[in-house]
Amino acid sequence: MELSARNQVKGTIREIKIGSVMAKVRVEIPGENVINSMITIDSVEELNLKVGDEVFAVIKSTDVMIAK
Image (cartoon, rainbow, N blue to C red; front, side, top):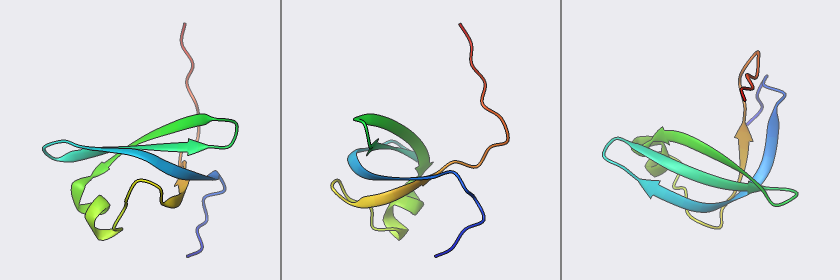
């Protein structure tokens, strides 16, 4: 699949926590960093996501906010 989004980071799923409606997917990316994504349970099931799968984290945003 090709996407117009340029912020794509390849990583490995390390954990999937299923809630009542949403799932938290923890993706380890190079440098031992982690990206957490909240997606629907339906998406987890449709993509057949499992711990250990190699995936792409696609970040679609025009700005990043930082607070201290």
